[in-house]
Amino acid sequence: MKNPTINLHDLLILIADPNSYTRRIIQGMLRGFGANKLMEVGSTSTLLQALIEQKVDALILDVGLVPPGGLALTRAIRRKKENQNRTIPILIMTSDLREATIKDARDAGVNMVIAKPMSPKDLYDRLA
Image (cartoon, rainbow, N blue to C red; front, side, top):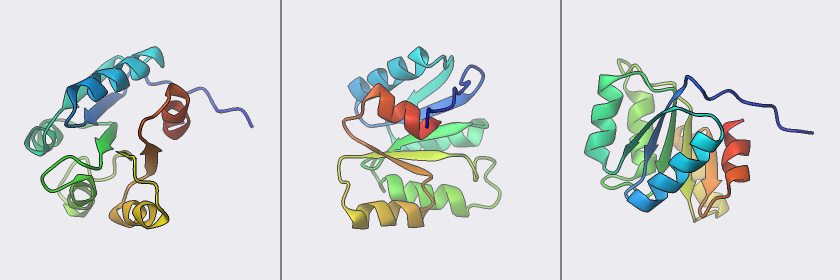
């Protein structure tokens, strides 16, 4: 089955990865898909501040964002009832694709896991 066409034009997508090169690559892919509202952060503190300041439509989060790590951050986002971003789609990036890792991500509240390194097709498929 062909992937549906997705419209990312007016969605605010937050990219959280400690590596600025990775953030730029992902931002380039998203712009290629038509996204025009992109934010990027490289630390937990700036991620949490961004989530407090505005409503985000999707979060692409590296599992290794420290401290405390992408899965712990996901749990915190999901459990805080007053958080306006509590239900946002969270896509977590990891190079560890063992079954236990995938289950931990699911149990933390992650919507999708993206393998690193990722291709534009992989990212698009997960977003769709």
